Image (cartoon, rainbow, N blue to C red; front, side, top):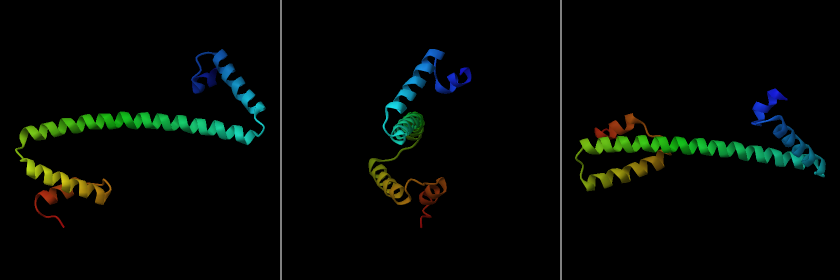
Length: 117
């Protein structure tokens, strides 16, 4: 039991036993055990999805901060007019749609050097 306390995230033996009893009572009161296990599996999957969502949200936040830093550094060193910026944004939106987000630095360099296909 002590070894399973950690994997169950239980803080005490009493909490572990309570969870085990709740599970077993749910199983006994369920008319169809496969229905009960389905609910348990759905609940477990929802927990995993929540964890993944939280992890992805954190990663996207960190990535956004890095992108904001990079854009500010570039904006400080470049002098680009609003019209060119608007055209570049439109081109980038189309390119991301076309490639489904798979953009490479090599492709961007080719475009900037006028070597686009």
